[in-house]
Image 1 (cartoon, rainbow, N blue to C red):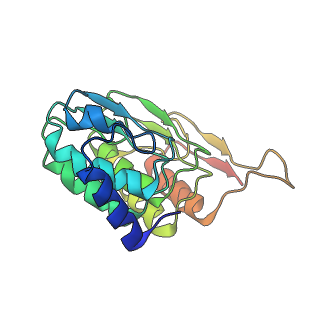
Image 2: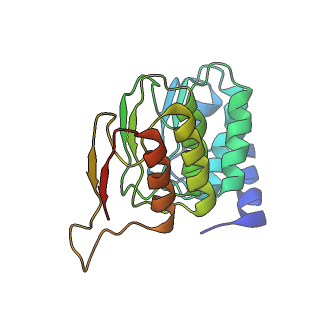
Image 3: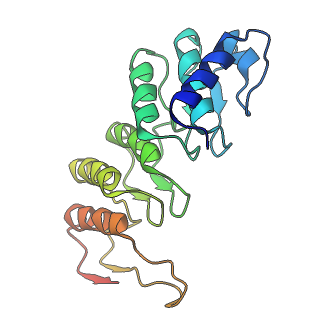
Length: 205
């Protein structure tokens, strides 16, 4: 993966090359001419350089209302930059491709990383219809899981797929040898669920 200063220099070169029409699945021509309302790059492998290029173009994309950048393997520093740019774009509602009308989100085993959690957390806060998400079995760390857990407890949202009326939850692995197994980050999500689901009386791990 291209990281650090090399990623910064390459993204700057891409941004300054006005005749380039596409870079690593990022549609430069359409972004440059502000002809997009929706930009779905979820899981396209744009990486850190691609995310920096998107962040560079976002200020001039005044028509953009929705971007999906989940599952693209960039770092938390870049996620912070993307969130800051989004705050300056009043029409841009999401960096996760969400309508904010969803009642349930299924992201279990989606290869989400800490940067993805950073993009998701502020959107969970404004989703008034959302009651259940499932974010188990991803590649979150303790910090990103805690960020999500704090948000979930404030909103009464499940992060482990537990419905509001559910009284029992079974998280035992489908295969005792192969898993999937709950990781430390998953345990933090589950702890938040115990607070958010007073109806829950029985849990199996």
